[in-house]
Length: 107
Image (cartoon, rainbow, N blue to C red; front, side):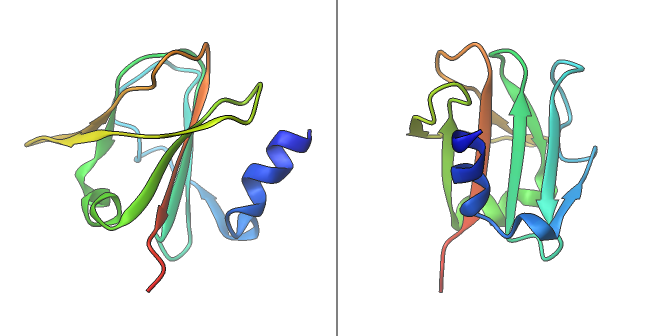
């Protein structure tokens, strides 16, 4: 529980809005949410796989901190992404499940 608490301390969790349009591909167990203002998003991947994220979030990805978080350990690694013609592709490294946290750079 401490790991999840630490993750949600990084965002304004009370502004969390579940959004099924964020993930364009992936396993049925994957879920995603964003903030009301669109300045962060978080996604849970139930198994390691490449996912496609809507291009609607391209500006956020270009000006953000992107991290993979291992839910079991809380370990964080920089999340690399590739912007394609139809989506933003992101792939976790090696965990059995993972969380992607994308937060806008502070101005």
